[in-house]
Image (cartoon, protein in one colour):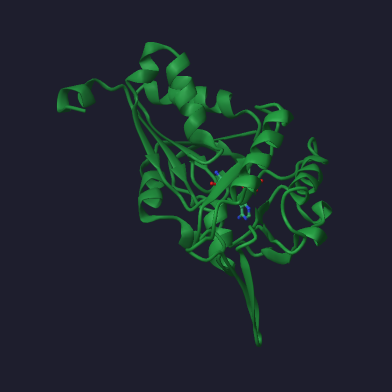
Length: 262
Ligand code: SAH
């Protein structure tokens, strides 16, 4: 963007990832963008994690109103304010950055003039992986288990493709009150492709005080032990669990792999 184009832009919107929970996993760039903003938008519990600053307006919203929240934050920025829209983890991973891009594409011309900055954050699958070793050390993919924005048949097709292609699979949004059965169905489906001993990790509230990490075999994975704050990692036949005396086991996927899974 040239200087004159920047001068014509109406205001500024930073879509800021604040990481999985711990304050020391907020990047300096994210902290600066949050401190600079005149107005903060976001899901209430995420806003609660941001240090307060006098004179800064806070506009908390419900978790499911992503598009409305993006429109509101863009409208505020388009009026000339400096706005930050807060996202958990990374804003580009099943979060607000795509909602903002959708709103810019569909919205009024003024939204396209807003100076948009996407500030990356530590996404849940990286935070969980780092806690236990290196489960994402070889090829992997991430699937959002929520069927709010896509049909369940598409989730099933992607689970089949990922498992048969030999990807480690990170499952985001495994469960919610409105979606109680999806994780059980997904695990059952994966059992049709993968061996009983494939390691599975339930990483809950990672980097927060109520963190809980459980490692189990696919055959034993119990969907009832996951909740909205859980990230599920499903390994491959290559994924290893290494026991250590007096220390939690290491879970890792070696950098090398044998032939194609199928
Ligand atoms: N943008 C976020 C993901 C939003 S979807 C990110 O990049 O992490 C919300 C899902 O993320 C949750 O249902 C859960 O699966 C996962 N998640 C978010 N924070 C988490 C944490 N601290 N520990 C484990 N999983 C987490």
